[in-house]
Image (cartoon, rainbow, N blue to C red; front, side, top):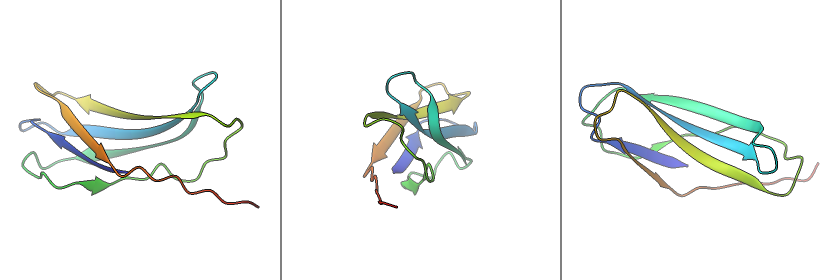
Length: 85
């Protein structure tokens, strides 16, 4: 998924991409990126990695954390790839 954060001043923020099992909110995968340049407005690719679902339904969640006065996060082009063993 491509993400970008806006309006976080001179602070460092973290953006996490999380994959959760829908029935009980158990984490299947998570990945966190630190965004250091407050003026860098380009989208950045982050990946949650490989995960194995135990059920058909999952939630995808983006989390923005850090000392932000006006946090905005944009997400685009979520892709889920599946394979059969």
